[in-house]
Each structure stands twice: as C-alpha cells, then as structure tokens.
Image (cartoon, rainbow, N blue to C red; front, side, top):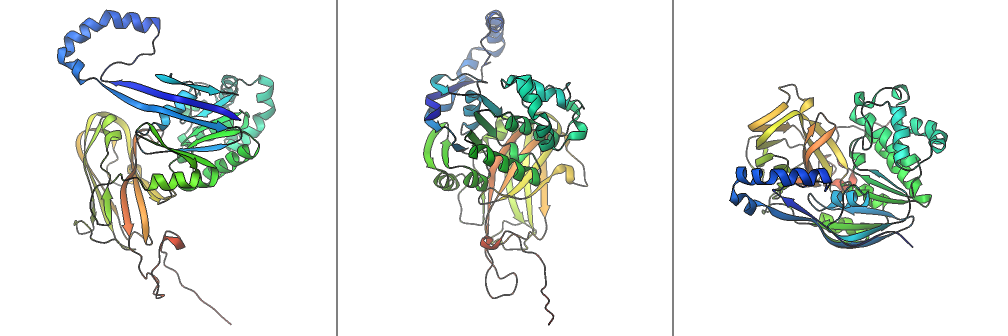
Length: 420
C-alpha cells in the first residue's frame, strides 16, 4: 500500500524574474513597484526571462516501510522534489498524497532557532513535527545521547559547529518516530563515525516499518540502505526500479568532456555559475605541469581552477573531495587546511591550485567533487563528480600482479615479518 503517491509532478521556476511566495503583501508590493522595475531594466529585460522546469511530469509511489533512494546529478531536481514532499514549496502541476507524519532533514539545522538552546530546539522541532510534549520528554535522553553533545545541550545553537548542528538535527528527526523520514545528504556533514551511526539508525527505522526517502551521492550507502531507487535527469524521472540498477545507470551517465586520457573534466558547470561563481577553466596536470597521458599509483597531481566570483563570498572555503566509483569518500581537503593565505573572502577573478604529492590510489576509477562552502556550515555550490580520474593498475608491491581498487583504494608502504 502506497504511503507516498506522486502523480504528474512538475515545478517551474522563472529565471530572471522575482518569484514571491504569493502573499497579499507581496502582490501589493509587486503591483506598485513593477512599473519602476520595468523602467529601470528596460523593455528587453523581459526577453531574458526564461522558464526552468526543475521537475517535469514526475510520477512514482512509495510503499509503507520502503527505503527509496533518490539519485541524480546537479540540477536533476532532487532538492526540489524533497521540498515539495516536505510541503516547503508548492508544485506548478501535479499532486502529492502523503499518509502519515513527515520529518524532513533537508539541510543542517533545518527548523532550529539559533537563539534557542539545544534543549529548547528539541522541543520546538518536535512540536513542529506534531509530537506532544510528553512524547518528546519520553525520548529526550535518548535523543541527546545519540547526538553526543550532552555538555552543550543548554548552549544556544548559534554557537554550535556544523557537526553539532547535524548531530542534534538528525537525532531529533530519527527519534520522534515519524511515519516518513526524508533525509537529504545530511551524512556528508558528520564525521565518519557519525555517518555510520546515522546509516545504522536509518536501517533500524526501515526495519521498524517506517518509510525513508534518502538522497545521497554516496552510491555505496544507497546500495546498502535502499531497496529501490529512482533516477532523475534534468527534472525527468528516467529510472524507477531496484537500487543496484539505479546506481549503475547513474554511474554510466556521460557527464564528462571528450577524450581518451585518464582525466575527464565535467562539461556542465552550471551549479557554480548559478551561485555567482563562474569557473573559467579546470585543469588537472602532472607535477611537471603537463596533461598526464597516464595515471599510476604514487603519481603527483596539480589541480588548477580559474574563476571569476561575480559577487563577494565572505567566510569562503573551497573543498575538494576524492571519492571512489561508488561515492565512498577517500579523502577530503579544504583551503582552511592550507598554510598559505586562507580564502576568507572571494571576489573577482582568481586562480586556485591544489597540489597532491604521491597520490596512493590503486588502479580504478575515482572522482573529485568541488564545492564552495561558507565557514563549513552551508554550501554556495557543489559540483559532484566534477573530475573523473582513471588510475592504471600497476604492480605496486612487487608481487607480480597489478593491484586495483578491487583490493581496496590505497597503496601503503608496509613490510611482513615472520619468526619461527
């Protein structure tokens, strides 16, 4: 029996025009100011306004107790879909029918008031989810214990780190027992131990008969957690079926530039451009500054990004994350780790360079995600799978056989000893 039913769902955004919330006040202000806006912008400005269908005729059902993975690239419509399901935004066409209480965790600190303490926000967030105060009290200790921030529970959440935010936010959403839990990439924020804890909790939730809608770029997590997957491309539903097949279809998407070399650069950089951060070029070079003809374990690489920031980004932090073919994060680095000038603020043209020496990746396919964050708390943009690296399997251990990612991801220096 379907607990979520989506029929012909479409959402249109008007690019280049103000999109208000449709309140009476907004309509009055728009009516008064529109002649002046028209005069300032000129008659031709209307021609630059275009329609973007973030979702286009999407239909699917979710059965009670099912864990559904929702996957797709940048601009596929995943976040728009979840906002409609969470009743944050209204669809342009189509309908959504939901039976039961919904808890949504769409970004860090959703539904939290920064001036209130963690304790107060647990009760506030629980009330917004439709829980009675007695129900929240019964689960309060369990929520705080899971979040692992007991000593800060009476501190205003505006002083929390991003990790503390997500721990408490997930703990509240997972322990107040909604019939439907919607989770959007929250696992990308917490540390590795907490990510495993969250996956275990969502597995427990699914085994308990509740429904989970899970958006993630960690394909290993999608395969492990989800029984079924849907794939979105350009706002359209292109696949609906077993999670393994959905993941394979997503990984087979052609998102990269042409060429037969070991490095492919993604062609679509629109997510960065929409945020006002125009990436002029991305180059991945060998240590001597040339385009590599081959990549092998132990090679050094230089990533060079030329950009134009169309506005000032304060508290900026650029992030590069290396992931396996299935989306498992192997390592991550940010400009805040560097010993040179930190970004702090970005404006105008510039060049970012990242040098990685003696990269110990075994033979296989890997991806680099690029992102610009604000003080590590929220993202201005994320380019998933921006760069594809193909490492050639080599005999790194002198064993007579070429080592590939089937035997792990990293080559480490080691020695065996045996005494009789």
